[in-house]
Length: 115
Image (cartoon, rainbow, N blue to C red; front, side):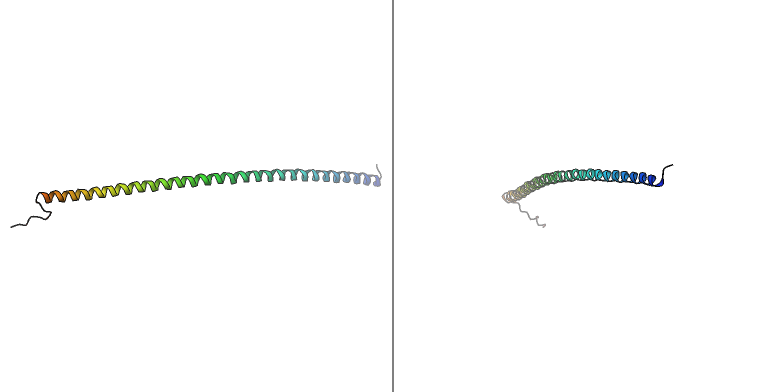
């Protein structure tokens, strides 16, 4: 059997190896974690830039669509107003022509009086 002092020296050596191994593993993990953090930050920045670019493009497309839609609706309203005004003018012309024809025939728009 080993003397107690020698066993304690062996135990101290093992503890020292565990401490060194633990320190090395901690440093290795810290380096890996820092490298991963840099990757994540770079990815986040790249994705953020792409997101901003995409949203700007979509905003431009939406604004163009809205502008085109509004112009098309406004054009349709102008066409409808023009058609309505023409229709009203035609009705007025027909009414004017109708009263003129009645006047030429000697007829009046008033009902005949009963005797």
